Length: 161
Image (cartoon, rainbow, N blue to C red; front, side, top):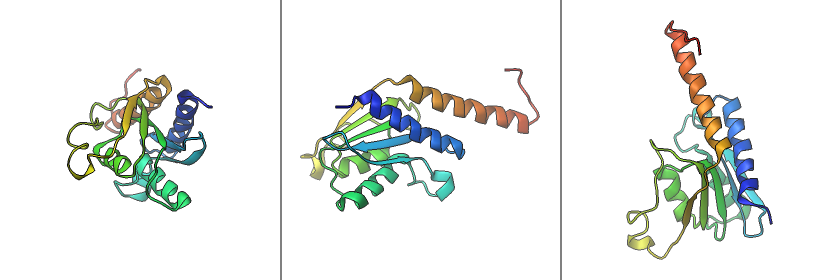
C-alpha cells in the first residue's frame, strides 16, 4: 500500500499544474480504499472564472462522473492546502471518509466542528488530518512571493530581494 506521502506528492504535482497557469497552486487527489487514484485536479478559478473551480470541487466532479455516483464512500482526499468552508462542506456531503491536507490556511482554512457535524447530517463522519508537508507549503510561498514582487514592479518599487 502506498503512503500518505506518496499521494501528497501527487497532489503537489497537481498544484504545480495550477502554478504553471498562474493559478493559486492547490492540488488534490482522491483515492479509493485500495489506494487507486480515482481523480486528480488543481485550482482553475481564474481560468474558468468561477469560485467553485477549487481543486477539491473539480476532483469531486470528476470522481462522481467516473464512479457514476456522488456518494464517494470510503475514499480519501489528499489536498495541498487546508480546505475552505465550501470545499469541506462538499467533501463532507459527498461522504469522503478522510481528508488529509499538507499546509494550513490561516486565512481561508476551516476545521470540522459542531457546525458541520450537527443537524440532519449528524450520522456522517469524516476525518480531517493535517499532515505538515513542506513541499505543499513551499509551492504556495513561492507563488505568493512572486505575486508580491510583480505588484512591486508594477508600482515601480523593485526590491533587491
